[in-house]
Image (cartoon, one colour):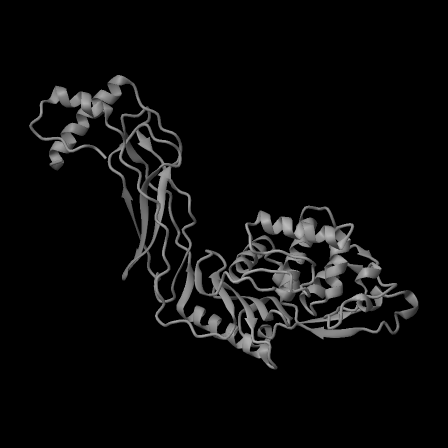
Length: 417
């Protein structure tokens, strides 16, 4: 920041000092804070939870969010992610049918497994296997997906753990792809972040897989020709009950094993706002799934009543005068998305203002913080977004710097600086 200059110092002595003055100190980046809701979140019985805005990542509620808990069949979302990633890269087709390997047949799954009922002699596509993961939560489907994409289940699990590490999910690890093992581990925070990433990558997966309410298998085309008149089709229904009785819910996955209790990864959208909620460890009692669903229903109801995603339209900032530089103006940009999570009753009318460091003196580096864009409504400030230099700005020549120093001196005199 320019040093204060006494009005009565001699001009020539000041010019040398002014030529050496650095630019204004960079403003600290401001992290937006979630404004407090009008009413507190409801109490829940689940051991751990995390609720966030799917677009902004803003956390609205958490409880024991970093406690490691087995994800149970939520594991199948990572299994689906690996499959969809490979399909998106063109390394495998979702619609090419193949025989399920013996290891994946329903009769070879552990006791109490949920199943899509894979069997010898069938032909099944990867798309059908993903539906078998999403709707009836088939453990056989998880094994079949793994063996469609890797030489062994162990190799596929290695790819799941590599991906978890790549995504920064340091508390999340897997030992098998279905979720039946208590040795699989995650946290509500990490799994909610994973779901946010998954939905950003595969937004159509909700309609194609996770919001599908029933699944019929095997169909005539899945069995040998001699069985096609009576293929033994079994119709199963999605275990996510909130798909049917909570407006806006369109995914993602439920899970249960004794060691974890009842888990669910939920997402719901209303009026352009989407929330993600992960609940882990609802009580392992008769009706524990209903307790888990009630937690989900109550927290999502609260979230939609209190918050919404606000999407300001931000014009490009006006260029700002540059002193002592080769160029006359600095172009400012904002590197953060302007979208934010705000109170539901705020932000109907938005106002923008800029707080810019003054003066801006060369040299400046690209990305250097130079100010803040403030977003407000009639009740006050809602969001602050850092403004930074769009590119490098070099010092001008000696005469340019001298002339600007003279102008700055008299400018400061006028302002009483």
